[in-house]
Image 1: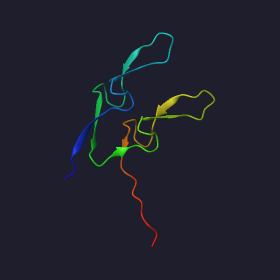
Image 2: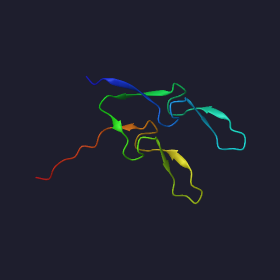
Image 3: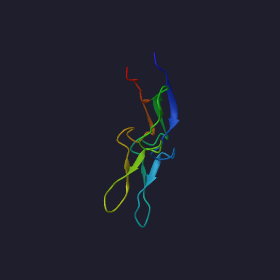
Length: 87
C-alpha cells in the first residue's frame, strides 16, 4: 500500500491564496490546494519535470502569462518517468 506525503502547494507557494494581477490586488483562494496550503501526493511522486516543480507554465501567446501545469495540475509533483531500455 502506497503512503502519502503532505507537501507544500507549488501553485500558490504554500500560501493558500493567490493575488490577481490587477492594479489593486485581490486575494483569492488557491484553486489547487483550496486554501489548505499543502497537497497530498503518493510518496513515490517527484518534482514535475514539465514545469520544474513550480506548478505553472508560460503560454506561447502574444501576452505571456502563467497557467497551471497540465502534467502535475499545479501541485508541482508527478509520477516519476519510467525509462525502459531497448533490448
